[in-house]
Image (cartoon, rainbow, N blue to C red; front, top):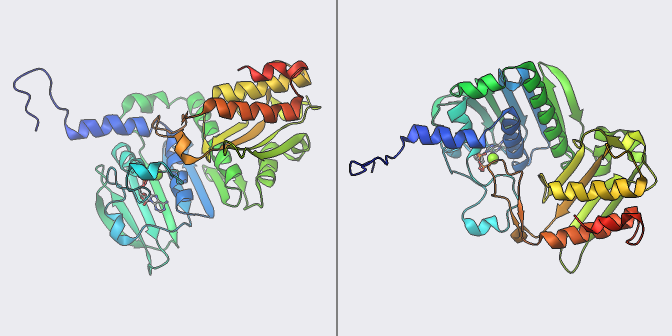
Length: 357
Ligand code: ADP
Ligand code: MG
């Protein structure tokens, strides 16, 4: 009902609402890649190819060898709030997939031209679906691709001139490519058994074969040299059920190999999600700098995965899901401090300040 009794308050047209909400979910090339790779991982892919043309502004393609989308589901795959991942809010309390909102594909359709090719193990051939800006199938035709799903995105932000303009300059595009590369690496480290390949204008930017463990995957990102200076700790608190796995520079190393002038190679996750947790990163850096006496302008490289009971994490805080809310943050920081003191020295020496954030 659009009536407003003649007043000033009017309901927005559907298409306007869609554009506004979509452009919050799909904010940049980075967020397109993130959403599509998350879908591939949720589909249990063991091989993921990401191809960008002109930094993604001409074309973004993500191909996986996952379970595919059943033909009866294709009609709904890009319809708003259709998801195969949760059924109700209770499922959110034990969420073990990246996706749950049924928003990414639909939002993408309203901001770009999208085609999806998919095949399940039971299908004889794959099908390519061209989608309308409402996420409906316009055209379906058979394709030669094997099992899995390929999403192709062209004309991104065709209807958002300001955003297209914003990313039009070379500097912004380079920054965006860096973000994409970091995000792919972050996924590839955790999903160490999955093959990843990132190409830009047909050149391989970064790739990784399936590897046995996180440590082997980290060698791919940090290099062999840096990994020789890293200490691996994995601990679980029986009392709080918090588990922390981390690779951090050893106490004795202030070498340039394991530090950078930016914090961009500190990979921080909560329950497999890449998260931005400034206070956690600050705590780690402080302990590291205190105990090693490393140059105060440097940032330690590192990997930190915090695993909590699903019920203690709220991942629905922002559209990009990079901010999360922890029910017992103090407990997490306390446990992390304990681990940091194990690496950089106990309370009482230089690392005392570790305990204060
Ligand atoms: P969500 O991931 O929150 O469920 P999306 O819009 O990202 O929402 O995807 C909608 C649905 O399409 C998913 O729930 C899933 O069933 C299906 N889907 C999307 N991408 C893939 C993929 N790469 N492989 C298999 N199924 C997919
Ligand atoms: Mg998704």
